[in-house]
Length: 137
Image 1 (cartoon, rainbow, N blue to C red):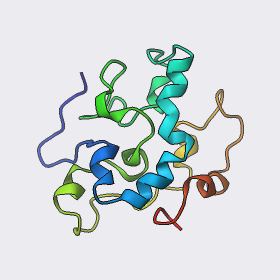
Image 2 (cartoon, helix red, strand yellow):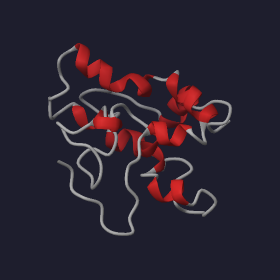
Image 3 (tube, rainbow, N blue to C red):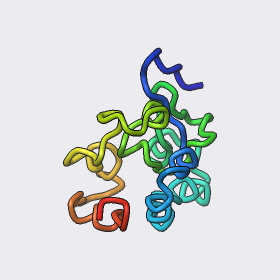
């Protein structure tokens, strides 16, 4: 099981909880490969491969996140991968600083999009594929 979240820290809530307020963003996300990331593991029977799972789920090996056998509502590359865990934002959506607006430059390449799985990755160019009305545009 994942480690528990320390008191006062944000926990992972899953994309469905985000959708309640961010329906337009959800529609954009649903059309991206990130929304089907876990299924790509399952079709190749790799969902229990330690070299693969961390990049196809949300909050892998982080407190309150997912593990190889505890993915529950955190399958796929969800909102929290880029924006951080959202439980505190859910409780107080108008408070600034509870989530990240966008990942730092180089975040994608340093976490998942790197060799041996991806040889070249231009985060600025690839971001255009996951942005849409209400989600960065």
